[in-house]
Image (cartoon, helix red, strand yellow):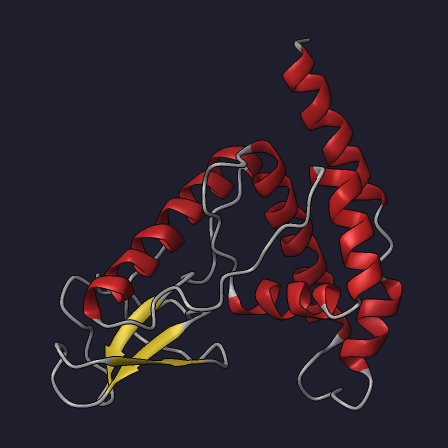
Length: 184
């Protein structure tokens, strides 16, 4: 085993050892309709996979699903713990860029491409076939924007555009069902 493989293995072990019980309790507190015990288990597992991809592929931007992103946010707001966990796993804080995809159609296309690449990377590493699209873009009448593939997957992120597909998209949260770019 190479030194790099040993480092990745240690990082993955540290990720597996993280205790997210307080984060899950905080997410459920006052929001039982939004977070079921099952969705928390899914989000936690997805977040661990996201962290593992970030540890193994530090140069690759990894785009999480909305559910995983919400779990990540809950970890981030526990600032001391997040900084300590990141330092132990990565040697630095893993920064979050919430602005990818909001600066017009080219940036929207970039986000779709990053989400699709992330899904392919996750499928390769973990042998999982995504059950939801990581990202899609639709017009407000439900039609796919230019460049979006047809799929009936429930998307984790949807960009809803007003009117024709070429207008500026608005990022919509909520895991809304839409027809758009499926991650495979």
